Image (cartoon, rainbow, N blue to C red; front, side):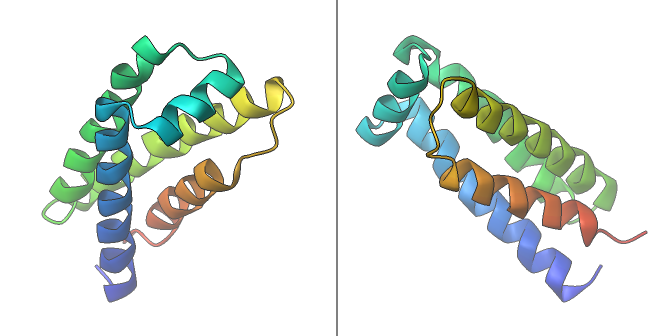
Length: 113
């Protein structure tokens, strides 16, 4: 495992921990963004669950790299769907989910073969 991969993995785990907690707490900024794309506030905690599970997988990937690859691949799919949800309603505010997507993709790309 390279230092770059570990750094990206830890960064992805930290970012998604923050994102999951924000969903669980239904932070105002998150509620506003979800309302803009038509996602009911009551679903926010459920959007935090896959992120929290992915964080566990990323951290487990420090011991078993394939866990990190699987978790990061799941996050790639999650954030692709998030971006598509925004674009579907004409919302171009995709910078945040795009950053999460790129970070997850970087974990996959830098994984040891």
